[in-house]
Picture 1 (cartoon, rainbow, N blue to C red):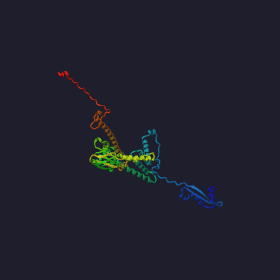
Picture 2: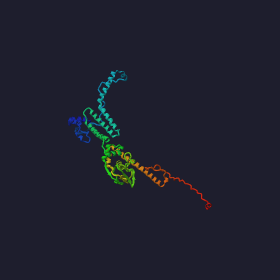
Picture 3: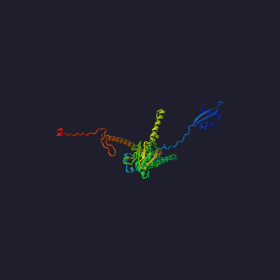
Picture 4: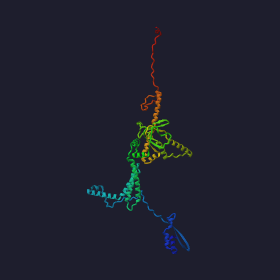
Length: 447
């Protein structure tokens, strides 16, 4: 028995009214919305057939209601290019255009420009959107942060203009959020422009410090102002200690004036000492002007990179970690002492926290400030190498003073050895023959 036949017999027996049967087949159950699957509706037909009460379950599946598609700012619905409703005349061929009169050519150009203006007027929103999309695409290929943000703002403005040209009711939600993005990017662009091109008034001492240690490495005046604001000034007198060997390095120092002497176990280290002598001044400042920058970079790199993962056993890993920690703590301590040799020695100091805040201020600040400090590290390495060579040459000169025959060339006034002979050849000594005197004979002496 089909459902229709069963429904017909129910109607014939008048056990249920036609309205009840229609409600069972057509009206979904209101309690279905509270169930786990609200789109599955249970229906039941009740009646008496051949003297027996029958209840048949009719399962119906109502399709879920269609959700309204939300408008996506990133994937807007782009309408196709509209064509102007004008009478279109067939374009003349090259031969027809060449044979046409001047008036006909003028009429053709006027019609062409009229159609072009009408087409641009109808499709200006789509053209602006395409232009903004191209700018947004180009922004992802730029490495300079200022260019990237400027192109991104151009793309956002183009999208707002496109939204304003759409027909029908205006949706303000994408316009609001895009305007927020434009405001944030605009503020960042202003900060970057001020940091790069901002004018700053510096004192005479600050101007000297800027030209000697920062200008050569691309630090702008506004960036130098931020650096000075984070620093504190230390004035040392003759004999005062700036850092002592073995003390933890928690600050970065920059000697801007005066004179300092670095020593390790009583031995002077010229490469990390500060002096104003012209021969010790390098590009970007003297090599001994920066103090503690190597310990700062060591801590900063280890915090970012970590000690790395190990494939050893836990016991070996613990031992290795202990050795690494001990070695790191040793490197983070001062390897030499620095003492002021003159009164009014001026030193700028930054804590590691303040220096890290300067590096994290902007990518430009991190680049130029890191370059300034790493240039000092390179100068120290070169200075240590030259000192080692000079020490080796001095030892050879000292040996030459004990054994003069091992030294052939002289030393100039600056202490630089011109040439040292590798082979020790004894000097040639001219041996003069003894004079022969004619002694008188005894016979003659007797007379």
